[in-house]
Image (cartoon, rainbow, N blue to C red; front, side):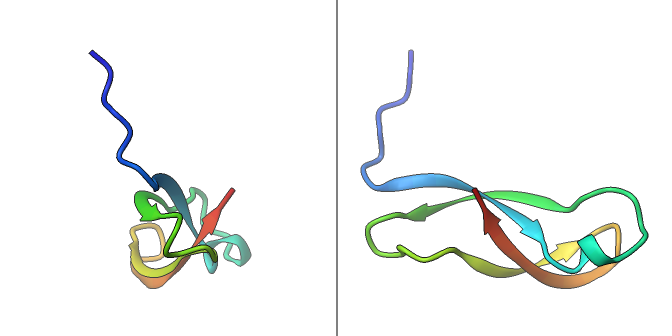
Length: 62
């Protein structure tokens, strides 16, 4: 049975911004949800990047 919609909450993908400039292979991505009605701009969170082994800024991608 399919889940019912939770209103304005949508799934978004967060991608590391620092990893693009480094020569290390792989890409750090996280999936989270946000309320589209309250947070209209793109989400930015500090998350752990296992490839770079440090906490970096992750931005929402489309």
